[in-house]
Amino acid sequence: MNKTEKNQLKKQSLLPWSLILIVGLIIVDQIVKHWVTSNIPLNGSRTFIPGLLDLDNLHNTGAAWSMLEGRQWFFAVITVIAIIVVAYLMWKNRRSAWIMTGLSLIMAGAVGNFIDRLSQRYVVDMFALKNVNFPVFNVADACLTVGVFIMLIVVLKEDDHK
Image 1 (cartoon, rainbow, N blue to C red):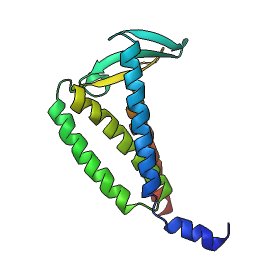
Image 2 (cartoon, rainbow, N blue to C red):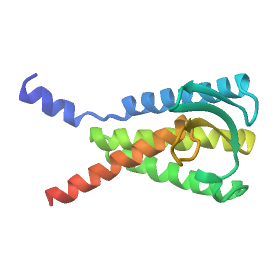
Image 3 (cartoon, rainbow, N blue to C red):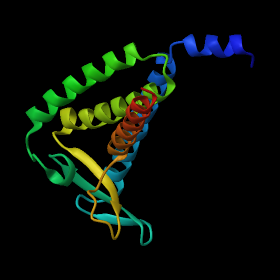
Image 4 (cartoon, helix red, strand yellow):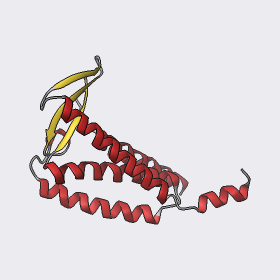
């Protein structure tokens, strides 16, 4: 790939690819949640990776560690605001691969959990790390966490360049 082709690639919008990533991750999140609720009884657990990871079926009406439990209106407002802000940032940074990756993960996670909150009034959590004091989480939570981590790295690297 010559320099002109690389510059053309940098100028292209990454929005189509980001939308594919977002939709794909939301689908995976919803499929995993559906499988867990169909195959593991509520508050039940199955060993997935012995000594490392269990699959649980928990209904969480709060945030991590069940903080702010039962405040669905609060999560709805925060999620709508987050979706609007992330969509704006995606449009503004549509040619930056790392920013678009981080924001796409954040968007997928926010929408994945928002679907649960709107349709069920709780979020299905399933991944329980063994021997670690960490909240049970789902695919959407993992997307949010990795997306925020990527954005943190982008911001820190940007500060290094200034």
